[in-house]
Image (cartoon, rainbow, N blue to C red; front, side, top):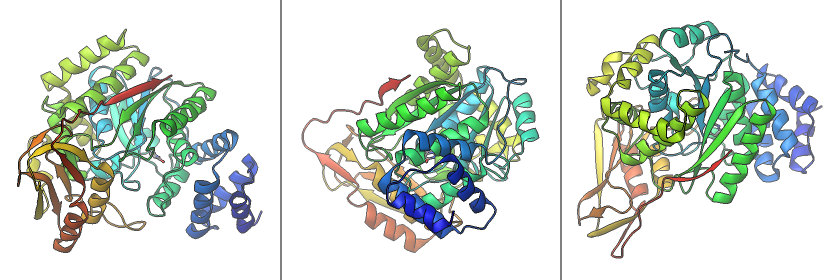
Amino acid sequence: MLPQEFIRKKRDGESQTLEELREFFSSYLNGEIPDYQVSAWLMAVCFRGMSEEETLYLTQVMAESGEILDLSSIAPNAVDKHSTGGVGDKTSIVLAPLMAHLGLKIAKMSGRGLGHSGGTIDKLESIPGFKTSLNKEEIFEGLEKVGCVMVSQSQDLAPLDGKLYALRDVTATVESIPLIASSIMSKKLAGGAKSIVLDVKVGKGAFMKTLDKALALSYLMVGIGKKADRNMIAILSQMDEPLGYKTGNNLEIMEVIDTLKGKGPADLIEVVAVTGAYMLLMGGKASSIEEGKELISKTLESGLAVERFSQMVAYQGGNPNVVDDYKLIPYAQYKEIIVSPETGLVKEIDAYKVGVANIITGAGRKKKGDEIDHKAGVVVRKKIGDKISKNEPIFDLYSSDDQKIEEAAKYLEDGFEISQEPVARSKHILGIVS
Ligand code: URA
């Protein structure tokens, strides 16, 4: 079928078959179809959607575009997790070494920044030398030696998701339930784990702004996983304000290390504890959610899992000394502070705006293939419900470019709200879909 016919079908709301999707995307992978035609199709999907059946087909085409790992001999009870994306969401980077320390094998395939949300792979690459593209043999060896690896899509693993993901990032085609579901589930199916825990973010800084949409996405992904014979669970978690305090690549790695050393922020610890407890339960390392949470809390307090993190960093070619020396992942040279104009309680910190401000500082991409500024980002100094005084800082912005930092600071000036009335603190975990 001509590419323009394939695009027209979706534009006009017609459904597409497995064969049509296969043909279009194999031509894209071998360079016969350019990015602009694929972008047009992605935008048509954003408006027209896809049926459950088409989403399943797309997931299959994406997963099968590379190898499907078979972990049965090395880790028959392997558990994987994935977040639908948020601002300051560094949960996976805490969980991989933590779960490995508690006896699970974790081969985690992640992505780069997507839209206004940061990406696990970009964050990890802020560690000097850290290599995120591993082949199958290297992944297996890492699981044997360290117990966890964190890798990106590659020529070998979900290459079609890698290409579509990079396009969606810069064409405003992220916020589509079928595109998110197929992107996530293709990586999870290719990753080979028997059990999968999904963290579905809801709120201003998430791709799903309402609970209804988050539930629809959860049911779709859980259904795709179950059809592929995976044990599935989805946790819905709040993303109105950023998770933790640090957003941006280097900055988030610092907060990951702090958390593994038992000094993490309460909201991040709660999401880590609930997600991790389900992973331990599904992987047979805890007999209840309560026991799982207890194990996690004790391990974080002991600071022992940071050793596993530095082993993973060393295995993947990075400098393991980052865990003791943050000067190896320094703050950027330019800093701007935004202060509160009045005394009161913090009523709102807009995670979406913080995410966009990150892109403006240079921490995210404006077009495909842009180099990012790993040192750039935004530190949020307060949580919703905290007291703040007039002229007290609420945001610290960092960038290696003086113009970008000014632009980001201007953009973020109204990214928060102060109230004189009582403010309820956010609930972090909103529900579970199994
Ligand atoms: N994470 C992914 O891997 N893909 C998406 O589309 C959104 C979040």
